[in-house]
Length: 446
Image (cartoon, rainbow, N blue to C red; front, side, top):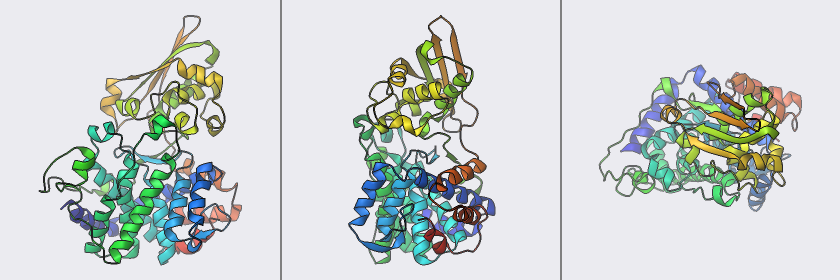
């Protein structure tokens, strides 16, 4: 069965992880924490804290909250919302999941609870990222996308369950039961992209809490279906539209030379992952001195994955933050005007200049870019100007943050809330991971 094989491969993987893998996991943690501190004042973070407050005091730290502590599941929920608050989180393109928003809060929360070391916590991060990628490979189909499922909500619980199972020291059968129950919490639709509503910010947090709950239930003796992926009524059929029957037809394939943690990228801009390349091309046009007031039409060439994702091809419905964060047209307009994408563009009424540019923009699927996705992510922006001239730019070969830039991102956002000494301490712990305990470290993330 798939989940039995997956659990076994994850157990075998843990001791084989190299320092390079753990270093990469440390950067993933820092990126997630940067998002928490950068987005700490967003309204959806306050909404999540209100939910956690209903549960009263607890043993686990709520980050960027002034020292608030709640029950572990509630703290994980709030922290996960914080990781997702700006849409500035990491992305695994092959699974279309933002693993840091799900796995990092669970790994640090459980690591704090059980007194794990930083190294063991980072091992859990790697395992969580990998579980997400392996399950996604079984069920992420065209049908999955067309039906409106959201990958982070559907596959995220498996990453949370894998990370928590490792840190709790669950045996193989208990881990399989936890993963089986995680399948029953797979959820999340993308109608928010049309409606402009805020449930998107809570979907990944729900996945994180559900995966943790599945582990706690399994450790208490509850059971989950070993065949929850490939079974007659399993995930592949329910979400992917793939009816294989009760016989296993798919196997996990974990290889240390292509782990999900190494194939995850860090966004260069606080926007949907599928808009990053178009933003880069528009930024180049801004740097060339193109006058936005002269632009009469814009054509955005990208992959079908970007063009067809809910909310991305949206030139006119820009009333709420999430509609602007997802829109290719709005992202390109903002980058043309500002030279970058600034979070301030998401608050208040849409700027009429940006809205006007977005309305004059068209998204077109480029077959070359489409075929290359997700191994390559490319976009091209073409402009027609009022004087009859044209201008165009193609995105850079890579549009993401290097590890050193993630470190700077963390420092920039965290120093607004934390003492520089604490920031340096956290950086030292995750950039050069050792056997230090994660509990004392997490306690400083007030």
